[in-house]
Length: 197
Image (cartoon, rainbow, N blue to C red; front, side, top):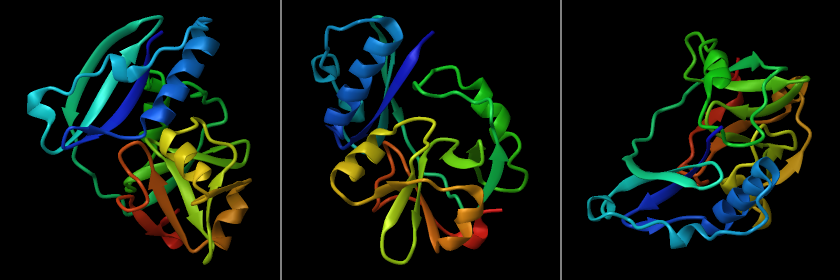
């Protein structure tokens, strides 16, 4: 099984390397039984053609790093989210095989993305951790499928907070945003809560 790390690269600069290194080494230890820590910065060289603009630095690895590529990134517009039940889904590690997530994504109907419900709790969207605004603070579910690096960074900075968010709790919030390695709180899509269906 292959795992992934996807790192934001903007104008040649790599973002959130501390959080990516932490998740990368934790996954290597838990999934492959490898206790020796590696530093991703020792393996990543930003190619000349990726030093201007926004790119996804996509690292594929198993017991060793297998591939590093830089893919041009374009933000997609997200205006609506469909609630989709995925009680059997497991995405504790960032697997390169996303077929089970793809099956859930195919249930989005006319919506742009999905919010996955597992055991009546909000987890993640197809590619992001959701955060919910109550009028004062941003909250993220304490039941994510994947502990995202942007999520970890923002929790550490006290910009977002964790709590249990069940399906019936959604209406208590005013807005929902989506964060991931490429979307921080300045760039993230923000939707009115009425656009979650």
